[in-house]
Image (cartoon, rainbow, N blue to C red; front, side, top):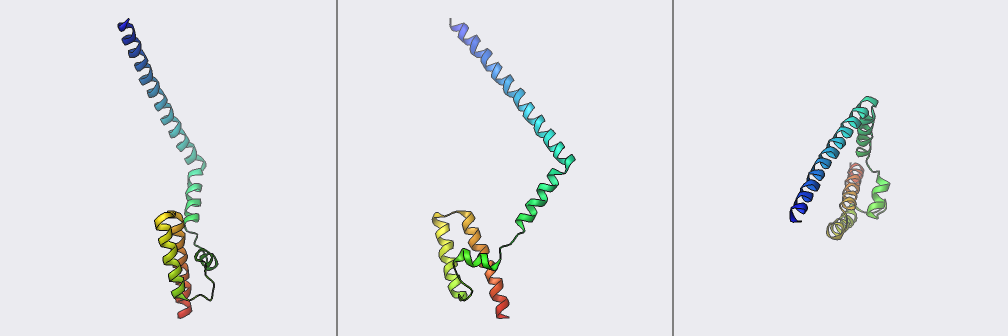
Length: 118
């Protein structure tokens, strides 16, 4: 009886190993074919161009003011105080995404205030 279970478990283990090998090769082949198809149709290049366009899109001054909760009349010192408070709050319990939006908003308004000063 014990030898039967040992043989059965050995057969099941071989079946699992063979099945996972077959599935792994099939997934790898499908992935290679998908990459080849994307290269032929230009989908990969289009996706890359869209990603570059989105990454290069900067926020404007109005959006930056909304993020920081300030107006056009707000002084630079007040903006820095708001920035510090929002940055610290998001560093403790917030998200990295919101924290990066706060940084980008400050950078945008910094450019605006520098051009006003000159």
